[in-house]
Length: 253
Image 1: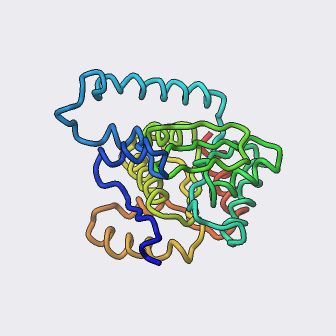
Image 2: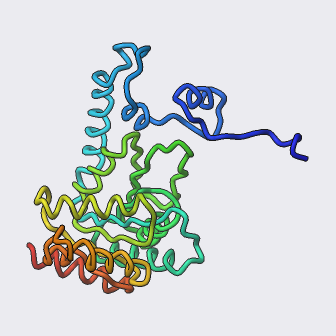
């Protein structure tokens, strides 16, 4: 009956989130949320953003130290919700294997779904399989196919690690997080903040609508240049994705 069910709700204020955390509920207050919220009058100086800089700095140092030997990294992104029997999971697993066998170090977000699949392919090939895990309000369980596992509290530190240690991105179907990684890389390449590296979109059916909109609307309105479209490579083949990356990197050496 309705009265027998315990009411549950998502916390709406910082105070409620803190209370949920103390009660060991599913929802956890993350360092990103604390950093990005506006200061409150009751915040003490020693809990201020100025002091939090030291924690951020230590996370950068730890990440740089852990990844210092990674020179041929390729990051694979995609949905954490993709199931093992999904064709995209199988394709990501094959892509991870082919990348590893081609001498690349596979980097993912370390979670389930597409991330697990790519890590799994590299792991089963006996090669380097790296997971850059992130602290989330609803705990993300790291997948078991990692030879090197990093854990980050801050999204922007983690994203810096992806960019710095990747020679290419392969973007499988995913949600907002996947789109965020894609467009951040495109922006950094377009503005020449980073070198131009291969950006592969995997799954033509999934990405066709987005690419059509970029061409018919964004390009038509002259908000990007025609050559910007050349930053993206679309494929449905794991072998083609890996071969393309290898070829571009070889030509750039």
